[in-house]
Length: 287
Ligand code: SF4
Ligand code: SF4
Ligand code: SF4
Image: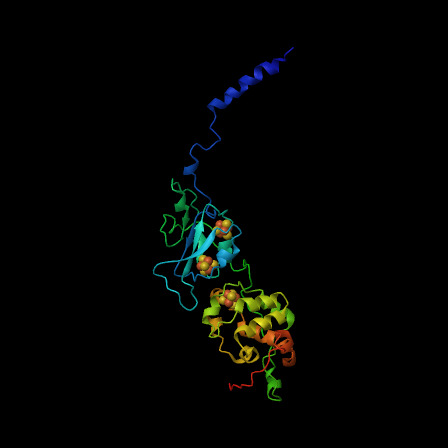
C-alpha cells in the first residue's frame, strides 16, 4: 500500500515554479572572469616570429605564416602565428612561453559564424573586437617562466691572479653549467640568420643539453672549421637577436660553442669527426 509521503511528494516539485531559475537562460550574455583564457591577441610589432608558440602547442593549432607589410630582418623571421580554433584547447601554453610577451588572451569567448574557415586567423593582423580588451589571460609575473631568464654566470679568474699568468681569464663552463645554460634555449633558430657562418646553433645547443658534446662538435664543423677560436673571440652577433634575450639574458651562444670545442683535445677531433680516412689532395690554404 502506498505511503502518504509517496502520494504527496510529486506535488512538492510545484514549489519550484515560483523560485528563481538556476539555469542561465542566455549563456552568450554571460560575462567571463577577468583572467578567463579567451580568444588570442598578438602585438605583431613586438612579436618577432620566433615560432616558439608554434613549437609548444600540443594540438598543432599554430602555424607561422608570412604577413603583408612585415619584412624578414635580423632577429625577426617576418612570420606571425596563425591560430586554428578547430584545434586550440585554450591551454595558454603559447602565451606562457612567448619569448617577447606579445601573445596574450582576451576574456572574450563568444564568436558565432557560419563559415568554419574564419576560425583560423592571425591575431593582431586580422582585426577583432577583442583586440583592445584589457581583461583576459597574460603571462603571470616574473616568477612564472617556462625557462630561466638569467644566464649561467661564467667563472672568471680573480683580478689578483690575472697579472701573475697568461691563463685565460674566462674559465669556461663546467658540464653542469653548460647543460643548465643550454636548457634555456627554446630552439627557435632566430639567431642562425644573424650568425655570419649560419651555424646550426639550436642543434649544437641541443647536443649540449643531451650531454653529447661529440655530436655538438660534428654540428660545429658542418659550418665552421674554427669553433675553438670562435668560441672565444667571436663578436657573437647571434646573441644580440636571441629571442630569449627579449625578456631576459640572451643565451651564452659563444660560450656554449667554446664548451663543446673544449671537451676533447684537438688530437681527438679527427676521430670524432670521422675525417681520418679523408685522403689529402696535396693542396694548402692560408687563413
Ligand atoms: S592555447 Fe594551447 S592549444 Fe591553443 S594555440 Fe595556444 S598552445 Fe595551442
Ligand atoms: S612566441 Fe611570441 S614572439 Fe614568438 S612567434 Fe609566438 S607570439 Fe611571436
Ligand atoms: S640561442 Fe636564442 S635565438 Fe638561438 S635558437 Fe636558442 S633561444 Fe633561439
